[in-house]
Length: 512
Image (cartoon, rainbow, N blue to C red; front, top):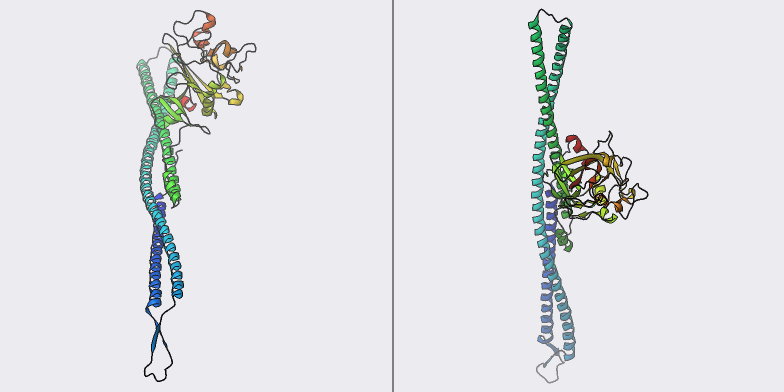
């Protein structure tokens, strides 16, 4: 009956693994950077040593050439000869070209090192941000897990209380059946005594039997009251369980979204895309409710404007009327004449007015809420002396292809108050405006003849979107018939002061 909490995988292990990989890559980049720096230094030193060696060899080491011994010369003559100047120029030019090439290589290596250094700084910032985001997600996951466990504990307590109440109710019913059997036997005895004649010798025994019967009847009445009270308590407990179930589903959705965010965070790259991936992380919103009653089950008890999102539809704002029996989605309100309801088809399809005042929610929005069926229409009316009337009808609303046809789905007979709308709408009644005549009267456009858009049949039973007349209403009947009217309550020519139309799931009807 209740949803089980999904297994909360610890996303911290994934985050720790990714951080460890990032740290290893950081170490490799730093090692590469150090290697490039060492290589550049070694190349520079080598060039310097080579230049020094060549110059030293070219200028510092003259060579000797020994000639033959001259006749008659007692000693050997020594001559010192240096390298030619052209040879020195060639060597110097080559060394200059080599030095220029090495200088360009060193400059290029410095540019690469600066680029690697800037990337390392970005990388370090990214790792820091990832660590902070991982810590935040871990804290959020632990908080959600704690809330889910708390709700599970409360759900278990409520289940135990509900089981005890059901057992007590069964015991009460058994006692009630036993009392009924005893009462039946006493009634048989009384009947037999009465049939035996009026003149019974033992009048004290008859009086005692009557007293016993009266006591048993009182006991039965007390038991019935106790059973009714227990049944009411069971109903309230069931409603609380429903609310807890919705909250648990909401928490499960939040946990799932947190896990998805953790997975997307861990799969981000370590370059520029990492930084953009971190910037795109946002808190995902909780899944929106499909109508006001679902908001009520989630714990909302204050009437006002909320945002809902029916299945396969875009989110939009509605006014929720929160009652003791549940949440009602308001689709129409008339109260002061501040909004002109004599609108065209497109306006009635999209909606108009203000949610805190007079408005029409829009046929498209209404259909998106009730398209799956199982809803009831709650209409509240008020006249100018303060009297109120309420009409509740199960209904279905078709889509655009059916001109948003209204079909009342009540199984039993209609009351007099319900016939103003229910009788004509049992076989689908399309919506009409003055620019789209879909009513059942061939020779008249009811929306143009009366005013406003409505599910008109033959123009004469109801129209809650007519003109709003302030008190006193106009004296001419042809003007009064254009007002807000409900024929079977105050008559065809009585403009009403107030009307409100609300919808809610049919399950709310059985609880109210």
